[in-house]
Length: 402
Image 1 (cartoon, rainbow, N blue to C red):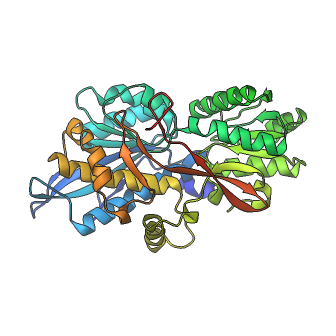
Image 2: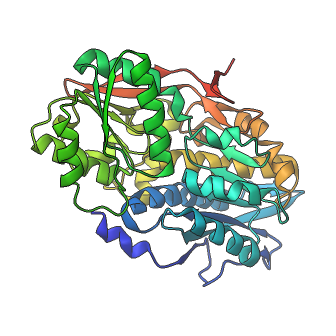
Image 3: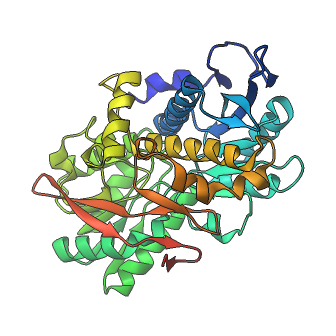
């Protein structure tokens, strides 16, 4: 399943509405519609290709809706959006190279980057001419701690998960923690936070056997080493597909304990590869299709109409769809498609004004730090069912949102 998506690794991929070209257009159409390029730099090849494509699918869905409705006008001029995507293979240095290319060749006022290494690499670039609004899809709180005035952080920050995840799994399975997540910057930060919280709650942290989920194809060695420590709970996570393969390998070798699953991996995608029985005792992100709000139900149905019933509307899809709609609404409120500072200044009001059917999650605030926040629910799989675990809102340097 993973290798089939490596066909996406073709360098520049342009997603346009009503046009096909090697380079995205920019300027004004013959009918007077202003064309605005939206940039994307993320993984479209390798082990994280599914993850990157989910982000692209969410952006594409939002842009198609915006263009078809034609309801975004800036200073009484209609706007049409085009998405320009570049594959950075999950490498921060390539993210920076891609952002330069997007700015120089496509003049993108907004660029979406869906991994923390790339986000941290390009944040300083956003405030240098030509400025751009960085739409950051990663839960790493370092994004907010950078205090960058041109960043919109879309997903919930992951440090809110540590205390409830540790408490639930330690109580259910025991106090010995094995560590086997992806060894990216994001994975290492997650591991540091979970192990610190595990010790704080009185548990014992065993050996760290982190591995590169994006390039490793044989997980037998790290799995064997982790199990040799006799853990009760194991921290895993990275892209969904390799995370599922690691969980399967652990179960195949007789592991019967619980899992703390980092928020990049999604249960619904993992269940396409392994049965839910192998995920028993796991805490992680609540599946989008399990939500019952009007906005979520409508979004899921439209997603299936566009991409087919065999595709899954994960949180990457939904939150980047949400983020694109917020950005478009902010452009209209700011009266500009080219001034990132003015657009950034209208994000909070834009989030509040969006219609319910454009909100797949009940998030309603963009904080002063640039974080989209709302009520977060995560899942603990017990007896084959999803049990909800509420997570407090957090922003800034870890303080709950009041």
